[in-house]
Amino acid sequence: MELIVSAIRINGDNNLDIELICPKGNELPTFTPGAHIDVRTPSGQIRQYSLCGSHVYRRVYRICVRKDVSSRGGSLSLHTDLRVRAKVTVSEPRNLFEIPHARRYLLFSAGIGITPIITMARCLVTDESYVEWHHYEGRRSSVAFLEEVSSGNLKNVTTLYLSDEGASFRKSVPECLLRPDSNTAIIACGPDGFLTLLEKRVAEAGWAPAQLYSERFRASPVGSLNNKAKGEFVVKLASSGQCFTIGAEDTISHVLLKNGIPVELSCEQGMCGACLTRVLEGVPDHKDVVLSATEREACNQMAICCSRSKSPLLVLDI
Image (cartoon, rainbow, N blue to C red):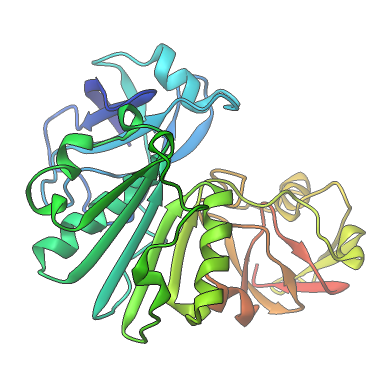
């Protein structure tokens, strides 16, 4: 759908806060905390951004985009080329990062990983759920939504850790992580290094893996540590019986499209879930950041834009 940029603001160092509205002022499709939209950036690339505004007020979509020095053009073009009143093509909201059911919630975020977490924090505080939120950033001037998290209801549940003040997740672990509790969900978003360390801390403390729900910014590089998965494998389409060989440098989606098989794609990085496809036979080698640990272990779906195979043959529900 085509929306209009109604406002652009600075929201911390290198963070651009963007509001999008319907050209006719109509209400927008509903979303729940943790949802994202696909955005066609001025560079023409499609990128995924978490919705960080109110999920109750339906006339505005709000995203916050950090300028990434390693950007391939998407976030950078939003910072340099986007203007108020510009038209922007976006998808309807999708949510692959829903708030799980639990009695208690521990929220962890780092950097621009604050964007999905703040919507969850608002919702949980409003619902009077037990919640602790631990947010990590390099310096105070870089914190997005600083005024909001430093005042009102969020102030009561939020702790900020700033690296330039000597506080980092590598140096110390919050007390709440040292007390495993079966009724608690740990929800986290941030850079890969932060989440990898969090996973390690959670495991060391004795939490069950299924209690950690996380969203990463980037998928793993294509290719597997398993030598067998580095080479070719065969994909069979259940509907037609057609078989295609996927080379070491190919992706399943690319090979299928090249052979005229329609495939739904969006990010092509394993981050959005648009290409998730049912697996009927075989063992996927997951490279996405969408599926949870439990979903990966089930081996019944995969992101065909980036994931590969641990078995010689995969039968897909296509």
